[in-house]
Length: 300
Ligand code: ZN
Image (cartoon, rainbow, N blue to C red; front, top):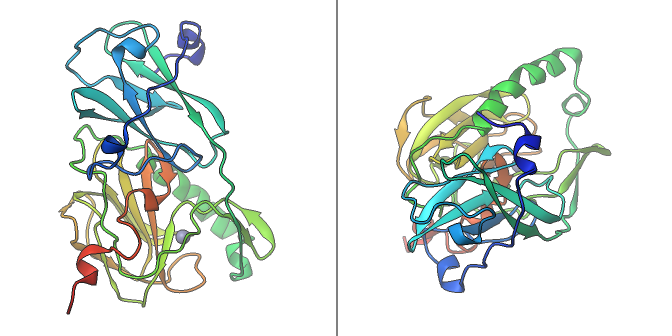
């Protein structure tokens, strides 16, 4: 249920959200903040800072949207905190969250998005994966609505943590956000993290969640999408096998599939995607620092 943009834009003024302290950003619960396209903004939803102000002491979480998508809102040290995924396509500059506390009037709160220069990555794949045949194109167009519906999922249960396990051991590529040129033709930027690993390597759920969807897709290959609640999703692509079914609940660390080379790939690897409010953000912001991959690194 959403109002036409003109119905609420007219009533809005905006203000800069307060910056969080370092202590809050370091909490194990929260991701790292980076207010850039492809990053995450942690925006304090302080009633008094909103224009117009929302009701003081409202106990229900305010409903926050960004570009029409519901945003994850957590209770943090007595205040509401919006965890906003910033799409790679976001223009640098001023961005607005719409805040609704249940009363008739909507408020807004603004934040600034800085520019970030991502690299260009040139890849060579079979020509049929760049210039699709009519049949493959029809397949791609059939798959898109289902995937977009998946990406826009917002479950009301909130995640316990926004910190993730690395789903397979190995060296993480830093190609998130890179502008991709396949066989000399520009395509969409890379919206996830690639971790090369041998075919068959177990892929573990990065956090507790529910299996939202599984399937075989033209570009993504065999795929599992997990719903962690509040619009927070993780996606695992190019699998050789999937080991779970939609609707199943999984625990962090549980094997959900095996590394493979299905879909559009240059070799076996896991493509790991993380979405907040429908935007695929840099997974590195939610993972332990490189080299600290937890259980995988223990002696023996
Ligand atoms: Zn990838």
